[in-house]
Image 1 (cartoon, helix red, strand yellow):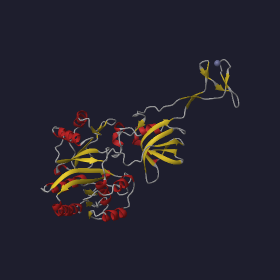
Image 2: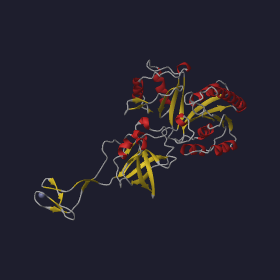
Image 3: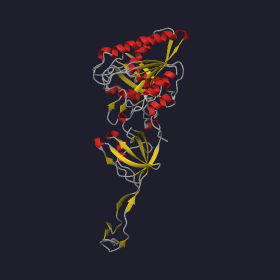
Length: 409
Ligand SMILES: [Zn+2]
């Protein structure tokens, strides 16, 4: 298992591309076989995160007599990487890469800690060194957190695939040629692929908008499905030819960053906070919390803004460092009745006749106890999947499981 992270600059490179160049060197050797590449997304609030917050791993099968050769290739490749990083622009955070080589399964806890919380780099480095893993580092070596998480991930049945296609060196930085029609037709003809488009915004999601070397990434449920979709795309005239490509097994859409479904009662009306997000105070398991929904939260935002104190909701969300919970999915468990009107008589609403007086019909004089009528309530102008609401596809985290892949239980 070879792990790699933190090789890129905000304007230059991409760790998937860096790993690809290492893999092509290793696979030139007759004593090696590349078995699988992996891309893991990590805790979205990590203080030192790279763009996309992903880390990489490649699993290679190597004859034991060639281990020294493998390490030599990795060391020489890492020296070249250091050389190219020294030419990165001065602005922005400097890359601090780490490459790890392990011949055994490393503790799975390294993955879980890195996908669910902030990791202390010195503790992690001590654990990695104690495990006998070979470590190559540069600069502050922040990459050790992602690289160690990537080699420790044990894919579950929730894993998915992303085929990444990279661009010709000469075209990097120019506009990508990936036509709208091509993406829409691919989504139609390859139903095992997903998150290709955001239908609510009629926007393609496979091509990034940054100056990085990635042409596009096709996500799907199996290695075959993403590979076939890529070959299909590459046969078209309205799609740029890729330079190289490779499928990666990923933890995207696994929900691994979330602890499960929570239930609570709304304590106060939704409050518009700074930056156009909505805050909602709730009581859950005897503890008050603040749920946060961003303006781009689509259906989640539309539902939350209609809630009133007493409503009970279920949610899945991520606790941010300030203790608030950023909502990723929400459902209405039960709503308190909404007041609609006073009782009516003779076709009109009965009126209050004053303090401590009953309600009275102005036509016939009938009276009634002073009360409000209510009806069972359900939210309006929102659409759900089995009662659950989620943001539009372009506003979801890589790690978030779409509702059409299964409703939270
Ligand atoms: Zn009346």
